[in-house]
Image (tube, rainbow, N blue to C red; front, side, top):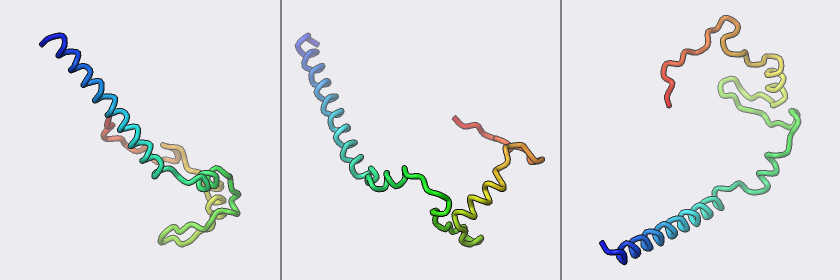
Length: 97
């Protein structure tokens, strides 16, 4: 292969990489536009609410529970740390990656 052919191949490879990078950035920008949440929803999620303002939650067969009752129950009965109250910690059989 001559020096001229190497330069042409390097230039073609560089052009391919630049075009592929530009296309992926363009597709990401278009995808983000459709996947982003509306500013009103982001502002509403950032604003804290009191327990009285929480809606009712449907807990399936248990029924509907108001947000204030659910918060009060959680405050009175916090989740137990692992391995406490005589219950053994869950056995991990496979650690995965």
